[in-house]
Image 1 (tube, rainbow, N blue to C red):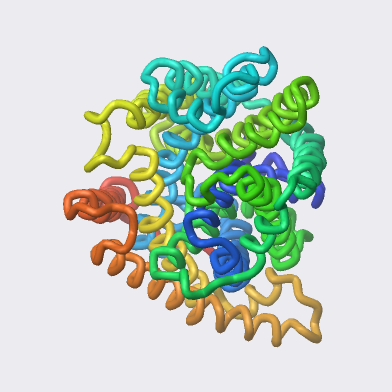
Image 2 (tube, rainbow, N blue to C red):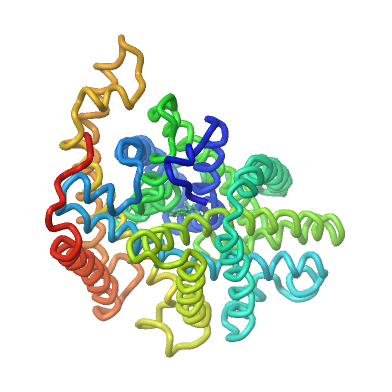
Length: 497
Ligand code: TRP
């Protein structure tokens, strides 16, 4: 999927945009955004999220594209090129997508189960029983979630193995608009349900008294996750950008499209939540439970058709994101250890599936839970709430202080008159506002995690999150030290910034 610069990378602006939007739009928009809005109290979360997209998301995305476009190589060598002591950021940028993929595919598997049910008119689509409790019964069973995870992981691995570059790019150009249209239809159906306006109020009328530290941290983590920030993928895409492409405009456009899709998912789900008297705080099952109700209300045949198409698009959006997530560690292993690409893909995919199987079973099997919390929530918290803020803030600081102002102005592609103004604003944001903001939010969030205001109640649970995150950071710093001695003794800071 990821091509070397010699292969020219992206040829058209549209292709580049669709590929980045294809990587950005995925389960983050359709599955986690709505459930986090529900947990975070509705409109206040949405408001904070949108502010974060502007002040943090777009700013950091520009930064990643800038260094990627200037380096033209993989993430670790890009960071190594900036300074030999910033390689650890690159290592984290490889570890995090790997960890995310482990649970991402579990949800991909759940989506396959739903699509199969709608096609076959069985399970949630059988018209019998309570669709809400069926989701719980399914995820808490031991066998089927693993089987569906396997199917999903297998498809992703096969695609990466054969590297169907063009196929995916072409497919994204059709699938992304198709997803958009399908989402709009579900939104319309949802908005015409009785009591739909309550859902809209929940989504658009903020009540800031509900906002706490963990809510803000959750919004920030969601911005990173949804815009695929802090894990090297945009550095990689930046390295395939043509010189003529405008980094500033592209980043704004990607931010807008990603947010619009997430908001549409919210508008599909919340009117239905209130119409059917469900709980907005249902957590990770929200998408599955609520939409099953919406499709059931459409009538047997129509509901089944829409259900099948909708979950098929969810699966496809998840597949395009999974491929990019898998590509990050695979590309690194191939380039660093000179292992055959097929072997590397198979090994990584196999390990991801193995870990994913435990995550899939952790909903029903107490032994696989940490302090009563399933592994999906645990992996999600460690990566999105702790590691990504650290990598993203560090990347902003590096870009802000290391890249020469003159070069930055060129890369931002502003025209002469507003160049200086745009540069000054962006330069100020990326050096001070964004990193300090991220670190404050991280600090407040961690403090409140410890004070027990968020999710994990026992001290062991809290420590499990924090300690694992610390271990990962220390591990990547050790890898940085080892790499400096083993490979790069004489390496100079090679990147022209
Ligand atoms: N942004 C993707 C989503 O919303 C998930 C994601 C996070 C991702 N990091 C990534 C996708 C890196 C591709 C590459 O679902």
